[in-house]
Length: 335
Image: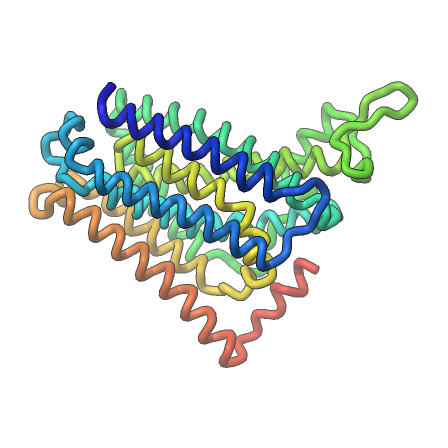
């Protein structure tokens, strides 16, 4: 068993224990999660990701020795993990705003939030694993796809930067919801916490079932941006899988922590857009970039850009809100 396989094994064991502890023991059925609990759980998942980063750092020499790319430096993979995790974590904040819209659109009671989010996120992880596996296999066979991903990220970042804030996603107008309505018998209530009920002997699916499907599907849509972005940071499947899963698992606690404040980050979207454009340009120019900058320096540069853009956009949003920039319009739109 090589070091990569050992790391996968450790990751699986730690993650299983963490899931039982956080999602099982700390999450009681139909109980609302307070800000304090959300903060503790968010710190738990972020701390676990950082502990995994330290573990990768310690195992850095062995991981580099296992890698078929001789140019991989001792601590390149750990830094790639941290960069990819921060990228995914910042993109997940964008997810939260859409999640809020979905819950409000279907009038989900707050006591059902934790359980619905849990199922939606676990489904999202399963979809992401499939998506990542497919993406890694395709890139390994057709390396030119990375240039296509790079162009896609540049386009996505540009459109995100220029997006009109007044254009708001309506879950009930989405193609996913219309598709569900076309072949499933749905009812317009939550069935007192059930996902499926029976009326006159026939099965009907409740709004909670619809919300779970929408959460997983919307996360997969976001993955169309985030996974190519992570591939622009690292091509190692270990880094792509672990950074994605850690970020998605922390999404539920982050939702409860930030749901009241996420709409205050008016300029976060622009910060994320700049990062996506940067990574896209980096992927397109990788051949030339490799001629005058080493891989380790490229990874460090990516990490620096991600931290500066995300932290800068959040701080700038807070400063502008304190100065009285009218961000409350967005708050009213989700009530």
